[in-house]
Amino acid sequence: MTIQILLLLFSNILIPLVRSDYCGDHKVPFGLELHKNGKMNLLCARPNCHEKKYAECPERADSDRCLTNSSWVGGLTQNSDGRLKLQCCEYDLLPKYATVQFENLTIRPGEYFEGEENTDNDQQVTSFDLIGDIKQLQDPEGKTYYSLLIYRYHCGNIPDTPPLWYKTKQWPYFQKDV
Ligand SMILES: *[C@@H]1O[C@H](CO)[C@@H](O)[C@H](O)[C@H]1NC(C)=O
Ligand SMILES: *[C@@H]1O[C@H](CO)[C@@H](O)[C@H](O)[C@H]1NC(C)=O
Image 1 (cartoon, helix red, strand yellow):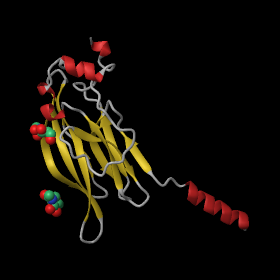
Image 2: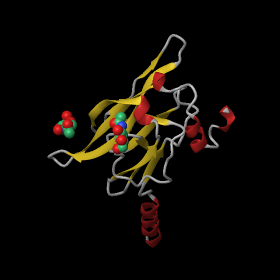
Image 3: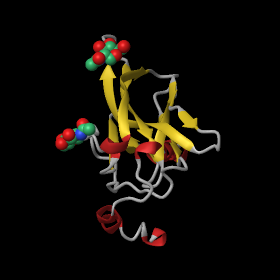
């Protein structure tokens, strides 16, 4: 009897209290699944016009919002109390390449968002969407929902080779390109 109770206690303790999901510094968050139970998954991609570019991501998801126009949601953590924390990856050139596609895209449990990816006749990606910010909100009944900021990244806006200062700054990531 005692052993059973102890085991129960232990199994409760072992349930992870924090859930995290990360795209990493070389992938972009192009979608989000919000399960009925409130758990969130980021959908990550590496579009071919962005594959050699890296964002600067902090180690952990500890921001409430990603508020600069050069950041996107590279990862997220859902705390046991239900609070959402974001990992805001900085990509200095984002404002040059991206335009705001949706400012307040609402998603509720059981829904998902998947960004559009456009390609040309050669299957080269010409534009794709990514998640810039996620705002956690509550409706009048106390149910949690989220508002997404979606950027559209226009590959054509990118110079074929990044400016020299950018290569230097991103060293050693662009070393292979030189
Ligand atoms: C992005 O933010 C910076 C700093 O706040 C500002 O100087 C710049 O004009 C903004 N760019 C765009 C395209 O909104
Ligand atoms: C965002 O959308 C939701 C649902 O459509 C709406 O209730 C809310 O007022 C909107 N917020 C802003 C800032 O537009």
